[in-house]
Length: 291
Image (cartoon, rainbow, N blue to C red; front, side, top):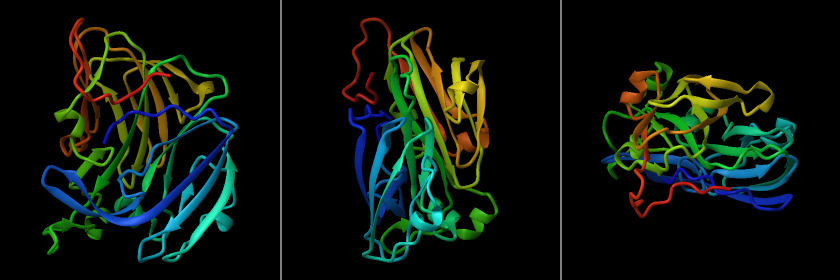
């Protein structure tokens, strides 16, 4: 999965439709998981709007069990809008994204931990009304997988509930797959401004986000510009939370990004930002766009 965050469309009304479905996904080399998804991927699509924009949202349940949607960026009544959708049903509503930040969305159907652990989560980025400086932007969603000991007949693993309750994940990942940005680094240029939107979907583990060899110029914890911190090395992101990180990589080379809870990094929550040398040709992948 590419980490790029597409620019927010130049509109005040964003029409978003997401279908919930069960589908196999690859979560580590050689490991297929029987996931519950928003849109067929884990995490679900990265959504991007601006402060004050209206989201016109339609949710459709294509799965065979009830599911729902909880937007952390929305200030609406859960009893009206975060209700369970039965198979084949749909729900439509609008909300205004009033507060900027990096927000989680997820299925809230009970037990919510089960639905999240099975893959039903994603990120919604709300840009502030006064734009932040131009940067290359990336979005990372940290999460965990708790696997059954043996695969099913179709080769997929599924959720082991007792492991989840024991806080013993098999894989801790960024954007749904263990170590994907370590084996395929994200390429940038030295000294360009990078903005990382990091959401922690959990369902259990705190993320201690850190870029090895870098110091965050600014960190907007929870996305709030009023609480910006300067010159920060590591920031804890609670489960269900998100923060915005700005950093420059000062010279060519590889800069790992991790959760500094190293047991979790060892289980897959690690990637690499590669600052290319002058004249070095980028590979074919383009994991982020400036705006």
